[in-house]
Length: 472
Image 1 (spheres, one colour):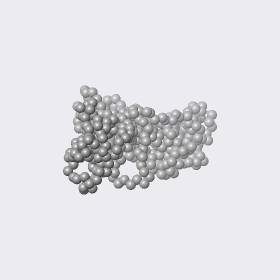
Image 2 (image 1 turned 135 degrees about the horizontal axis):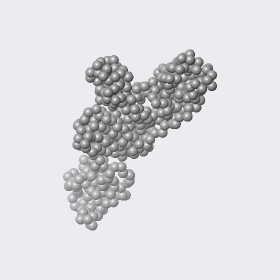
Image 3 (image 1 turned 60 degrees about the horizontal axis):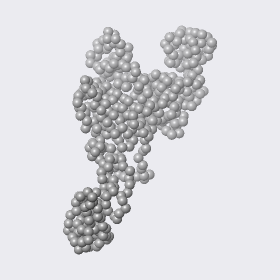
Image 4 (image 1 turned 45 degrees about the vertical axis):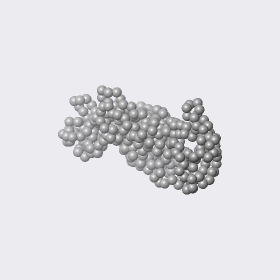
């Protein structure tokens, strides 16, 4: 097997920055009691002013008076790690979140699908940059070794067991993913590198440090690691807390784009689509506003999901300032890509009908876009009726040809009749509902060469023609 580790060195900070409207401004995560607030993580802009992890908040304000502080939430790390595991599931069916600051995925079975490792690695990095997560990637024959190597050097790939053993032997014990107490004790004993630790008497190490140390070094060298594999949930639920109250739907577009983009990444990971999701706008002192986004078929394109959600959001009234946004999707059917010809001759800018349909429904409302289906009525003006989308296509009742353009109401034919091509066809119906018609229909060619659909009153062979439609 071959495992890739995606190390996430600042996962909590990235989770905040990717949702913040001004990530380029100085920002720090803080924690601790009110009297002893300390910095947990800082972004690059804050670091340039001398702010750093572990610094007291008061000392940080002495260096930089104006910077954004966000409360550190340890639970966010697990949520973002699970989100990235769902993303990685599109590339491998074996994904694990067994390490607090990383995800690992088995890639040997995926190389045949996604190409050799350099190409596969570029794809992973492009996705992670687009999602907004700082990362380091390494590859090794086992997951724990890949996790260790990712902390040593970004981009390192060791695919054979023998070279891995040599690389592990040179790693300093201080960077071998041991707890600080164990690492200091080993250093005091003169064991400075993992190679020395591998050669040390196992019984003595077990008596001094317990079985945990031996388990760690054995799993680095290939002993099976009994971790559970990740399984993507059947429900997507993501919330963004806004930095300030928002009263305009336009100001909500930035977090909305991030939410729909994350939903699309999650759907791609589970190879599914979404047919309905709900946006919940959170207010203070007011019930949440729910904006329902429904589609007639499963979709997962991030641009389309954003466009549809934007259209629904613009139609919704916002009764109070918005404090947070939450996207919940529970209807996640399988995704079936649109059918395309192998040699598609559509113009480059042409839009598929399904995409256009959903955008129209989002902009104009569900009732504004509908279909026509045949009705059980021989009167032409009542031969079709409005139907909600989607509809099951079926043919109209068996009759003679009907025109593609039916006039709203018949008008006298003003052109002369050159040829009668078909007819008469008697239509006699509607006596039961007050819409009685008795007509003889003909297909004719006019003097100007057009094909028209005309009728006379039933039985009047020499009466005037009334024009009811045109054939294409």
